[in-house]
Amino acid sequence: MQSQPYEELIRQGWYVLTDLLEQPAVDMGSDRDGDGQPAVAILNGNVQHPREWMPFYGMTSLYAPYVNGSSLNQPHADWKSPWLAAFCEDLQQTFPYVYANTYLTPPQSKAMNLHADDREVFVVQLVGSKEWEVMKEVPVAFPYSHEQFGKDDLEIPSNVINGGASITCTLKAGDVLYIPRGHCHHAKCTDDLSFHVTIAVPTFDWSLAGMIHATSQSILANVEDNRKGILPIEALDDTEPNKVLQRQIDNAIELLRENITPEHILNNLQTRLEPHQRRGKRHYEKQFERARATTAEMWLPVGPLAARHVSMSTKVRYSTYEEREQLEELRKLPPGMLHVRNELKDDVSSILSRLQSDEKLEVKVSELKSLLPSSASAVWCDLALLGFVKQAVEAGALSVAD
Image (cartoon, rainbow, N blue to C red):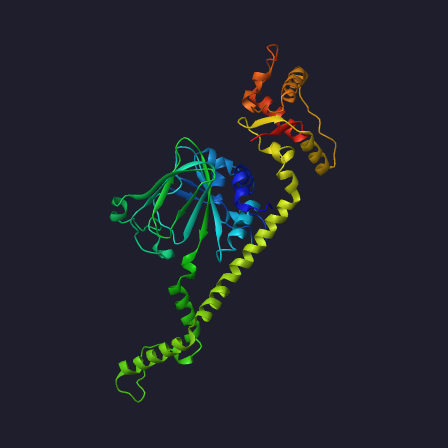
């Protein structure tokens, strides 16, 4: 991976998106650890898991629900993407633990209604744009998982809705929005699609109250008397049960006072984090290995991987000598051949010659017909044009410019 994970993530935003879309919707492997949770489709506020929507569409492709108007949410996308794995690993030099969820939303739609989260969130826009609103009022300060208003039938209080927004903004590729834990927010797309990643910092999991609670349980449970039920209470030599219970409480508090120290809390926190960190590291290494297998080609604007992401809106140019040399060295094969029907051969030569004559010329695939002579064949269609460009990029004759 590259030395600056954030910059590389932004630069490769479109490839991060398509790489996630082209992975299986459901992990069919037998590995108990799996590849994380499957992506879910969200349509009109209804969340559907792959095993629910796959029978409807009759296919496993994630493109199917998206084209039908669904938003797609990929939990733990850092376990499925080398770019997100590198970004989260880098962030964990600062934060004890983070993870990434991605959201793809079609134009003129929204993925989720107004809600609050039990974690700190950094929204990083990767592709397209999205309008965001973060409310001023907070239903519960620093909520836990069972206090996420807007989820699990917890209605947003009227004072939050009527209190207005503290932030109203439109995020574009490369922009970052920080949403503090507990602040209600929602977002929508206008005329553009949106693909963003939310970096979650689960501070609820290491709050002081939570850590004291967990530490207290472990300390008190080591004392046999504390494991006993308090009802019915055996008064022993004391005829007033409340005094017996008070002595037990006093003893428990003294035990906690002697044993709960900053070192104890921090050790317990590390013990709690270690399983998450180990599991994440295994997944990250798996993604890095996948990236290493294709890294050199992944960063090249020529070759099979570059060709896979070419669309009608992609800009292309004539490839450089260095790009063709890199591709040939990587593949250990001579440059590929272009295959087109006989009627198009002269037109293809015309396009390539025109681009070769001006190394700075960059043209969208959809506009390449403008480079054709008036005598060009009438059998050209968009699919033929796209197919020619994909071949040319894979063979190294043309290069992706954007």
